[in-house]
Figure 1 (cartoon, rainbow, N blue to C red):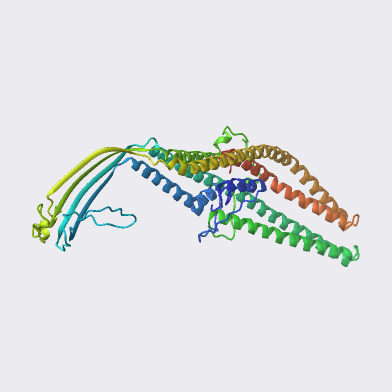
Figure 2: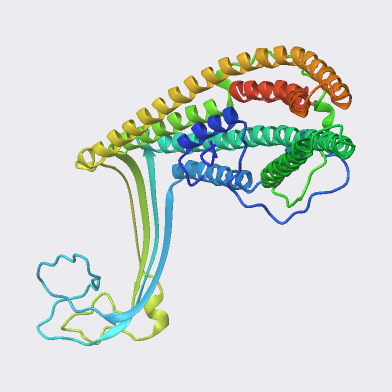
Length: 482
């Protein structure tokens, strides 16, 4: 959907747009297809079309990648429990002049040389080295690390629900477009049959007009009816081409036409009930996952204010080309030899525990936590809205199923009556007992009856699809499809 439920458009708009598409019966796509070519031979079954669409559609592939990225970040969040271990090796060359005095290095690099103080500047220089291993482990974070892990897991659940929602919506779209194309192709057959009838009437009218049995105006009316039938056929072909293009986009294929399974016409589903709760609808689960993810983000913001308890340890080795008794009295007690300068001669270690707390963090983070609560509340309203819309859609789908089944019972009676009336008017007209206007009215009635008969079965399937979309039980529809 937003694309419809489904991208780069907000997820909330996706759900609403999808409902509109299902209600309208127009299943569209906002993505460009790959250059794949449909097979022009053989019948494309609905199950095959859905499998092909789910395999090819880029939006589904994109959401699969987003899910894998979230899963990787979830694994990475657990690595925050590991300690930091830093090893450092430093070798340098320089002077060691010392001087008494205060110093505070702010924003700039300083020199950590340490040496004796003397009355004069000395440019004596030697090699030195520092070897360091530093370990720091936050053993207790008052739930901060755990909250980040929970947030990462919530993101995985949200992206997983988004992927399932995308697959569900796309399946419904393909099924809807498939049924729409079946209707469009049936309309073409009806338009062709109507054109044949109009041409047969025109041929009969011309013959009778030439012999003077009918007025010449009948020929004009017959010609007009043929033209109207041709225009209707062109319109039906244009409509079928439009729906074919929509189905091609949903399947991510390039195709001029599809040969569909016409066994939908003449068959009706036997089961219209489902035990699946509305809460299991992939759309509802996605909106619920968004709320959980926002709540987890709010917990992370709150716990980021808390302190942390750290264990730390440092092991250090130092080397210097300056000897221990180097001083202004003995300025020659140093060596410029590299080997002597980098060979460690002093070792130190430190181990301890510390607790650190940014006392200003509650002020800095408070508004962030507050913002997350607002986001969560906004998601909750959207969750309630999609629930209400799906409940209304479910009621409407049951009503539509009832009406479609009733129409299915009336359609044969209408067609039989219209066919008998057309036959009667044809005979009467050929015998000069009625006008061409009466004949054309009968022909229009027969054409309408044929159209109603063509869509009666498909209307039942579309009503069942609408219910499957509302409940989230797509198996209710696809398991009964031919």
